[in-house]
Length: 221
Image (cartoon, rainbow, N blue to C red):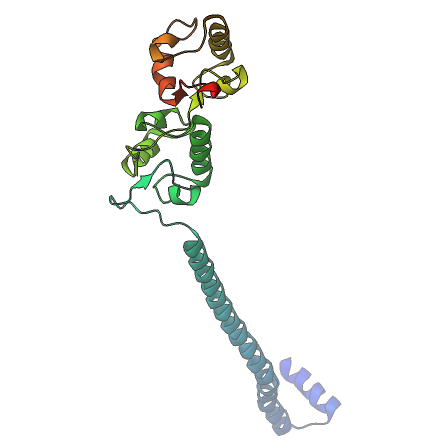
């Protein structure tokens, strides 16, 4: 049956068996010849995309290294060096960032509390700084010092107004009013013991606030 169909094809196209066999041999060659340029083009495209991908990866890695180097150059040195000791009453925010665990927010908070307080007179006051973990307080105590000759900002107990007294974190408004009322009724305070007579001023409050009080009035200057 196939031979019958073959004879019909040969008769229709007017070609012989030898020509048919030659055509069958040439057809694969022609297909290969047509496919080779497309294959070469596909290979070049694939190779170029791989090369571009590698170049892109290398460029991204270089960019990450540059960004990391910039961050390291801008960031303060957070060294655990035991020789690092800062004066807590003169250190700036940027200096405090060198202490392990101290962030920019905490450094700003430390400096702000120091200003409101009038300066630190003992390291136990670090416990009163809001937001410091126990570990950060330990690092802060380890890498800071308080100059023995340091004199805090003094508050004149014989001339300060209730607002000025209550602005200190160790005195509230009621205690400040009690001090001023007692002063107006009984005269100026001469020493720490005289302040014990003021209502609402207990021993704990007196012990905390006494380093920040001055017993001279404006008339004594």
